[in-house]
Picture 1 (cartoon, rainbow, N blue to C red):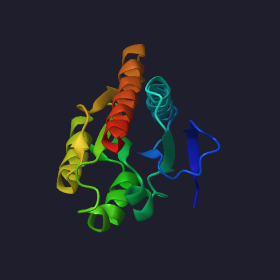
Picture 2 (picture 1 turned 90 degrees about the vertical axis):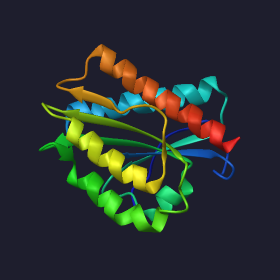
Picture 3 (picture 1 turned 45 degrees about the vertical axis):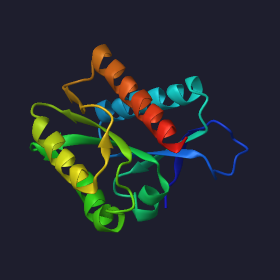
Length: 173
């Protein structure tokens, strides 16, 4: 199972007692990949600034499994908008984890970013409906980007990562 650690603030820590932010993404294009980097940069910068013991774990949506979700303290979700809906990969993720994680993850903080070439609202709404069912707590409205990410969009993505990290660290304190 692929494991990518974006950054661990304490490299000698075994991971126990550490707050964990799980980034579930489907990033098939250069634009979505750049967005992923902006979100993760914000998350790790906030962990540094807040001096939090934080692990940011990246999982492609098709590789994320129930233990990943149960072991995390908060979530960042990223998807392209395909035909006005979330990617099939992110939908598969939700189909896999929804019922096993339904009660155990209620109230955990989460954030979302969506990229598309035209319409992104349908994709965001679909994700929000599923996450509402899970009972997760949104840290802010989704970051929606149409076309190539601008400097403003990159800053909003960075802030999404930072705000979600702050919420995760607060929930673990």
